[in-house]
Image (cartoon, rainbow, N blue to C red; front, side):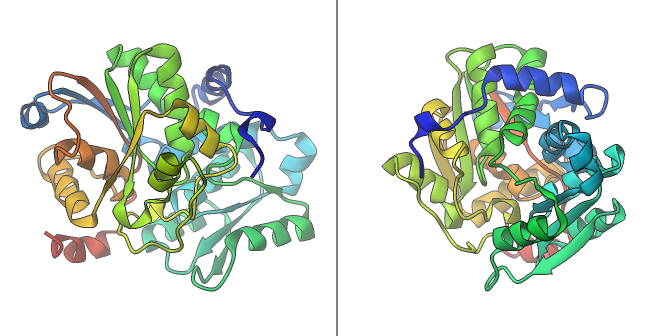
Length: 326
């Protein structure tokens, strides 16, 4: 991996430009509060509901920001992306809006709700076996064969900058925060959020939260060396990424205060609280940051806390299995 100094990392200025590009196309999602959640944590919690974003997740912000900047000749040829679901849907929808052909490489065991939505946006889907195949290799081969531009799910400056617009909106709406928590898979949302918080709310501690079974980012953060994990067994399917990326790893090291992990049982408890008490349909990955706060894995008493609910594409066929974890 190159030294961080040799990589052109995105900055807050890129987030500002991304906000301009997506304005009027991406939704400005609501911020919700809950007296019950505040009483439970003795804090003031602000939930940024990216569950209401187009495509059902924050991923649309980065996908549109990346695709809209492509040269016209590349827009005609198209793009290829690889994703277990939310980035797939985001690229599918953004490409539909912009009239760009898109091929999406998805694991065969990805949630049916995400695969179906991606197809309904008009994307061509190529399935692979996550246990035996390399999705990035498949994406590169398709790119070479068809002249497609590769749009990765997190390790891309425009994707990070687009993701950061969610935290930008949150802080603009509610004011300075003491703590901001986001789910972490490949680190795109976490990196962009940290850049936005550093610029708009100096002194805010930004933390990433990932599933215990897929704790590669936490181990990377602690050891300062890039760690990986392969196909972790967790209900948080959007956080099964192998590792942080060439961009996101140095951004996380340079701008994030700490990392936390939650096990699936803790995650399910938070998930049902969000569904039943706040009436918010959040998918497991989207609830990671909320779980760390609601289940009191972090002491936030007296603090103003931002929590990004990153996605709401729930596979309802799995609800009974998740409930059995309680």
